[in-house]
Amino acid sequence: MYKRRNHTFIKDTILIFFATLFFVGGPVLLANWQVNKSLQPHSPIEMIRSIQLRDGEYALKTLAAYGFDIKQIRRNKAAVPEVFFTNLPRELPRIKNSKIKKELFFSVLLPPVLKVNEIIRAERNKLKKIILKITLGSKVSEPEYYWLTQKLVQYKVKVRDVGDFTNRLGDILEKLLNRMNIIPPELALAQAAQESGWGTSRFAQQGNALYGQWTWGSGCGMVPAQRDEGKTHRMKCFKSIIEAVNSYMLNLNTHNAYRALRTARRAFRDDQVMDVIPLVETLISYSEEGPAYVEKIKNIIRVNRLTDFSQARLRS
Image 1: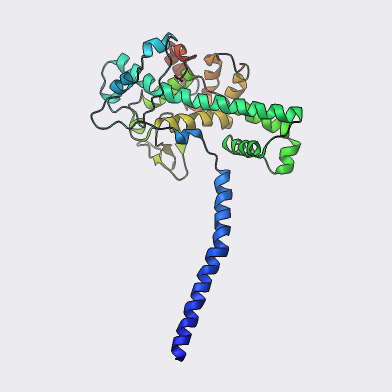
Image 2 (image 1 turned 180 degrees about the vertical axis):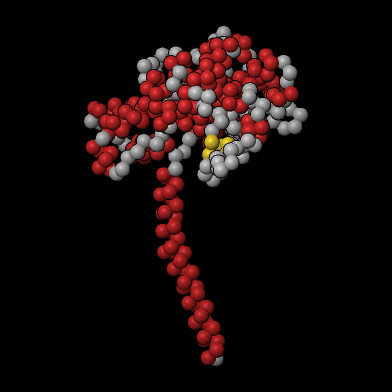
């Protein structure tokens, strides 16, 4: 009888312990998770459905099925269908005809480039409306403040605390507005072509590493075959092409090395077509080649008439 009571006491103690852990510790852990989750910026990019080509399927046929006509798009006589591939076409390295290879590469990259720009443009308009509200002394809603906090984190605009935000409100919002802006399609296409070997490099084919971005942290990364001894960087890879494009644009819009690009971009109004050349000339730090890299990007834009895509728009 005594032993049975002792066993029941131990059992009850264990049950009370786990109940306390669940009902007291659980909400605390959940609250911490929600706070950390709220600090992580979310993007509409995560909701975009990409097409995974199966073995034997060709991107050219898929594009044709969606009515993709790059010649008409170049003439600004057709909109760009929303066709987003998960990976680069596997046939790219096997295509011998350089004209066909380039047209396929541009056709695959153009929709995600325009889509990311479309999202940036919509968010920029939303930010301008919030700034106007603040300027006029109108009430800013809690969802708008929450969204603003998310964008400050996403675009790496540093704010120490609430007091710092209040005291430097004008400067902070101006910096965010300067960073939250589109990248001309012709520049995004030219850099992808240069950095990925027209979509044929191992990094591009296996990891959607289209823009030569490095990473040192956790996550997807491919080790370069000719990495110098003692170096620890990896080539950043992505789950989809549009994620790679989004990361590239965010990099240009936030990294200190591209501050001059953002300054040059301010010369153009939102309703203007940007002259891409002044922006290209600021990219000396993008590659170890420096000025030679800038000339290569200019040459790709000129030879391939990429300014034809400067006014391209997605099909509604």
